[in-house]
Image 1: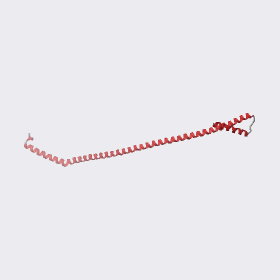
Image 2 (image 1 turned 60 degrees about the vertical axis):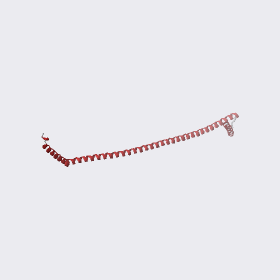
Image 3 (image 1 turned 90 degrees about the horizontal axis):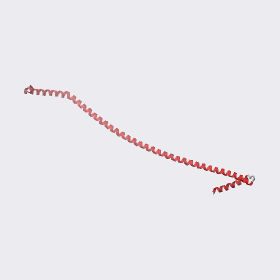
Length: 168
């Protein structure tokens, strides 16, 4: 095995070291700067992406807080509107109740006045008919026609007697 001969082995090691050095120098001079720049660029892109993601997350959290604040404000406003609507409905119910009570009182008062007027008309009608009846009875009793003065006097007396009997 020739590769293990000491003379051949040492020269082989020497040329391996030289070729490795040349390869390393060529890689260092031409390949490593490109690879390192690509790696640095890749690192920068990843860092920028992480920064952008962090900034987006921060903006999203900020918008979420704004949304929650707006939602809370809208909820509070809705509660205020609902309370105002309930208060207005209650006030309208009370106004309607007062108006209906006033209308009922007015109708009751009108009915009372109408009843009183009808009662007075009925009493007046009864007095007139009673007077006429009393005059007719008086004519039959006396068997003669009475004068207007006599008629009025008898009518007044009859009404007075009738009024006294109603008052008792």
